[in-house]
Image (cartoon, rainbow over all chains, first blue to last red; front, side, top):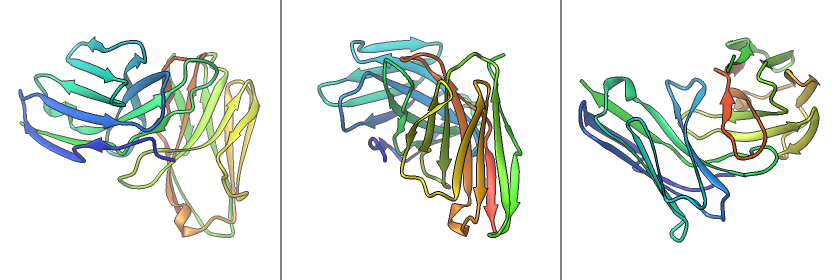
Length: 112
Length: 112
């Protein structure tokens, strides 16, 4: 089953611009994770934010979490052509195994 | 070694064939997963193995049969598949709760 929606579904920007993707989810969460997928291959973990955190940074990535609105956003600053990929949010658990439930995804195209 | 290795990368099989997908990790993770991903859709969880025991089966048809021979290996046995089963099959593993999942590059399966 799908946890929630991501918007936009697709985003096209120029190199150097910032890209913002939003994720909404339906149920209470322990953590929310963002993954990247190139050309329909494997997913790569980008960042994990726990339910008691509001903001997290990793390099050019900034993630926010608003549990009252059940939403999260991923900001990629100073985008590069190599950032072109699909980005998925996924809700996870803090104990035991991770039953990740993915959002619908955002397809990002960064043009040189 | 933070890699999850899946074989084969591509597989074409007839509806009467029996084939197996293989997945291997050497990160000491005790949770392993199979996901199915259709084109332009998010990954959907199929099975979870925790400590080599099947913990979750997301109502997957019996023509898909998972197996966990040991803590490093995960197989997915396929039999009598339908064309609509054509998809990217992703294997993943994770450590204890609240951590990221590591994904393999997937097996692109085509059923003819």
